Image (cartoon, rainbow, N blue to C red):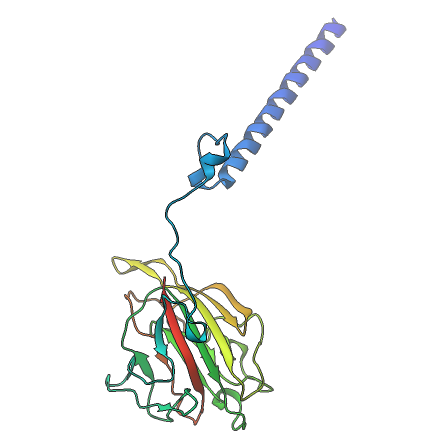
Length: 268
């Protein structure tokens, strides 16, 4: 009798272990399936040709003068300010076009913006602070790039110039501290390459926030940062529904003497 009971117990233990193993395998398979992108659901291909695509064919892009992509919109190349107007009244931009083909902020003249409206973009822009350092903190060579007139990438001379780090060079102003401070010496040219994904709205409701990636002199300083809303000097950022809008450059109004050159954009 005892032997029968022992065999009975062993039998059910083995059955239980088998069911547990089977359940774990099922769970593991389901877990693996959940990691698979939706486009790869279903029967897996058995030939290499089944996963080879020939359409669409990407358009060919070449580099023109100053390494500007052939499909880019040139916003400033030193020849004039035809693409820009003043924010306050949409009058012709009055910033200074220098003999070297750069654009100098005209102090206290006001911000300027593009005549064109943009959504998601790749933006290239070069800028420099003056070599002769004056002022400190937020009053040293301060300007900014406002994408869609709302979301600011900070420009300023942060060389040996401490300030709040979410307001230093390369910050998404008051939202994201840059991953590194990659500025060249004061008076030399910096480069920003910005990849910006515009927010999406549906019935005045935010369905996808804006994202931005920034390279400063080739160094990644903002990595697909989720923008929290339009810039606010005081208070919390908060989204409001909007469509395409201009790119805006800031006149900080404190003799910033920031210069720009080689500005182009690709619509994404």
